[in-house]
Amino acid sequence: MEQNKDILDIQAAEANQHKKKKFILCYHSFSATNFKRARTQIRKLADAAGAPISIAVVPSIGAVPESEADEFREELEKFVQEGYEIMLHGARHRADLFIKRSLQGKFALWISNNEAEFAGLNERLTQTLLKRSLALWNAHGTEKPSGFIPPIWFGNKYLKNLALDIFDYYEDYHGIYQKTENGIKKTKSRPLSFSIYPPAMLGIVQTYACLRMLLPGGTHRLVFHDKDFRTIGEKRILNMVRYVSTMREKIMYRDL
Amino acid sequence: MSDWLFKSWLKISALTAILFFFYHLFISQKLEEESFTSNKDK
Image (cartoon, rainbow over all chains, first blue to last red):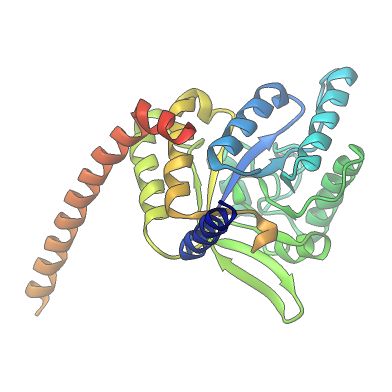
């Protein structure tokens, strides 16, 4: 009996090893305003994937009452205790429209509905906003996040290096970056996200995401937002996670 | 030469579109399947 169990364990380990393709499952924009809905969605995603997932947290509390802010902090702490990986996701996930930005940055704001708060900032403003983001995070009293994800993946030419001075990981549209002894290591990865697409395109985008996961290459990021649970629907999202998990091994940023 | 290249590109594009369409049908069905969810849950 014991021997059979060992054989099964070995077979499972081998099967996992053969699944060389990897992916990251990340829930984006977990915040004090949506945490009551989002905590259930995150746990359902983790159940479908069979392991805790990565969560990109917006640290700003906004105008929520203090009692809810406390509940949000407790929830964050609970996720950390349960082995979920926390990434910092900007400061407010909303751009300050009164600060100076490059033309590229202004364009990024236009196409992102003013959510790309780091887009087109100069070095000093980037540093200030990054520090503000970290200060907002530190106010929650939870341990330091693994990495930094700029809202909508729009950064600027200074953000990557400044973020990697503070965090272990940084990502943009083209890949995930981590600091090593030999400099910065880049992992090729595409974000497969659905929240910015109009409903009519969602079917095709889901097919593209599944196809991208099926084909070899890259450690792609499957990203879900609160909004996706209303537009795509919970059943399709969980089935997608299960389908992708049959083709690729789910990892976290810290496993890269 | 350019004519041959254009025709090849056209054929590859058409074939890719057909394959993508069938994969789209397969995925739409898979993501809607009740059994896929419940089997995996078991």
